[in-house]
Length: 262
Image 1 (cartoon, rainbow, N blue to C red):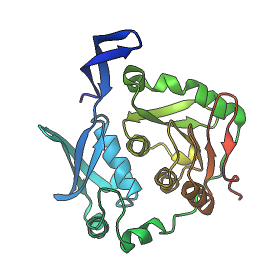
Image 2 (cartoon, rainbow, N blue to C red; image 1 turned 180 degrees about the vertical axis):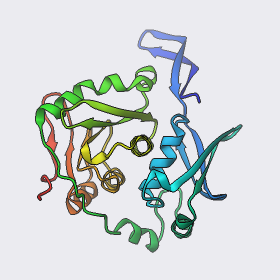
Image 3 (cartoon, rainbow, N blue to C red; image 1 turned 30 degrees about the horizontal axis):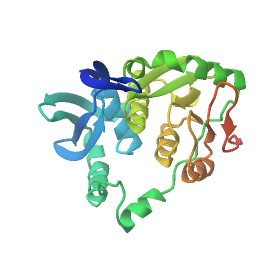
């Protein structure tokens, strides 16, 4: 799977221009099928696709664990990738229920009253308790760049990292999409048997409500993002007991929601 590609460009400077080459991150359609039924087409970087669709299945609440997925087959086509997932029989109906909801979703992401109700659907309360150690948070942030080879080559990829309570980065995944990067990370942890409750997520992106929801559903108690959080992200995080930290910089961070109480 190719995550980047060389592209001929023209470098424009105040004194003139010249031909050059630039490495760009690959973005392509990933068609996701469950038990032969088309579910969604996502735009993502075609790398770590098994992790991606596992995390996507968990975030969509189609499955409860990676064990509910019996098989994953990835096929490259001239137009993109098709990923075929085989679910255990007892998870087919939840998938079909979500398919019926997604039929009304438009390119903007949300259309119609049914989807407004989906946005307001209750989230589970985070059972794990957040561990707020400033030294650990800043240590993870200091070492995040080392986990971004695709971004280093292209300047155009997000990273989602899972960090131990002491700040050690245990796992990281990159993608052109921030949501896809987090799904890849969640999937990687699920496939390896690592519990997100034992650490925190660190993302190189703005924090929207979708990232909060994916974090909560994964069971991680603390989410840290490089850029700011939206109001809906803050509201959803507080309601679910997720500790949310945003605008993470080497000299300071902002705690948006209070730590979860026992």
